[in-house]
Image (cartoon, rainbow, N blue to C red):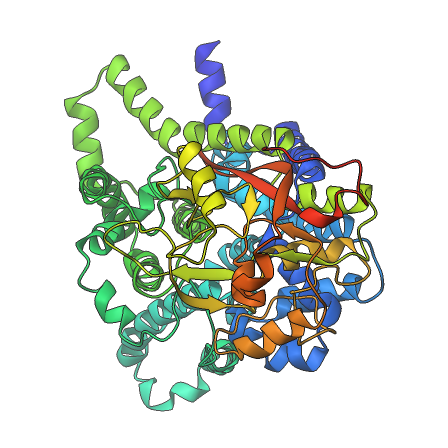
Length: 598
């Protein structure tokens, strides 16, 4: 029986198991997606698709969003025709993810067990399957590209067109496609030199497809080139940021351990992606050496080394030294799937390196064979599938954060009230936490001391006093970016109008967040002041910066509601306690509310 199961797992025959796996995948992501609350990136894309003109989607917004406009154009079909937000964006995502996994399960050359289990690994199921972002298009493009690779020289358009699709999906897609095309060109030149056709290269049927994708990639790069006022990943005026990054040892170590992070690793996540400890980075880099050894030796043996290494290195360098978030690590998983797909699909199948056979002879025992097989299966399949289950369960049980605010507003019919929410505030770093000078009345400072809050506490990366009362003391502010109001963008799709008074006050027709940090802050503040004092505040804000301290000598905002929030990545999660405040002189108008802290 054991032998039959093993043979079935490694069989390449297709049957009911594949269709059952595809059905389970589609049902699985549909169920989890139904519970999933769209994150900021998902909402931002819908806001753009809904309120931006096609001219801006094509020629302005890509300079701030950092990826080609295909995803926004696709969503605009639904957003601009009045289709419901969550249902529509999730429907598009589930549709493309199901198509991508259908190609993987039904068309890939992997053994049956791998084909049926791979779709349930973390990036393919949760990160790119449940979260509605352009990576559903990326996965589809990868699978189509793998299908066209083997006969690329005889039918170049079948390979180039999916690569063009990949370019249109994201900036990372452009990088991968560029690496694959460069590897192909390096293969073509020796061949043309040997056949004496190099002088007439433009007559080769591969020339025009390659020229077309080159022109497309160049146009897309110009389209997404960051504007000079584009805010991304903390980058503002520092033109030398990339040189500073090049002096950090941890970034070079990250080049080694990213392949592990694409599967079983959990070092890089939302809370550590920019701050992995050096010791842990060293350990992960050392643990990654065997993975690199397998990848390099297998691709060299099968003459696919350039096809693997060029897109991998290009993406790694961009990730480590320019721009990379945790969810981008899934691109390495897709590169690995693509690489092993094309090696197994070649005539004669994938050839194993000589050392592999020697190792099998040297350690030829059932126990060793099972241990190695279990290690590989655990690394590539089992652990990533556990991550999928963990995040799916958390997503079903918990909320992200926006729904808490949205439900509060709707349940209390506050759509027409003056509601303010937080914007990006960067505090000056100091050696010691100092009290705000004499501007804060003694009563508030006494309360802070009595509640053992005289030391700074951390709330959403901000160091504050008295988080249940506003205005509250805070360190000196170094920089404010009043265009960056993330909660405003996340809330916007749930209402027919903008309900946040300080969100896009200077751009009333836009429901998407403007990633511009070169702004007229005082103009924004004036636009907020003209609307009067906010009645409700969502999360901590430096309200004193807008209205002045004198306004709050005898006036406070008090915490009346707390929302629990969660954001997960693999085996890690970020838990937040988000607060809603009511202006102190309005409690008689809202008898349903009371102070949570007295």
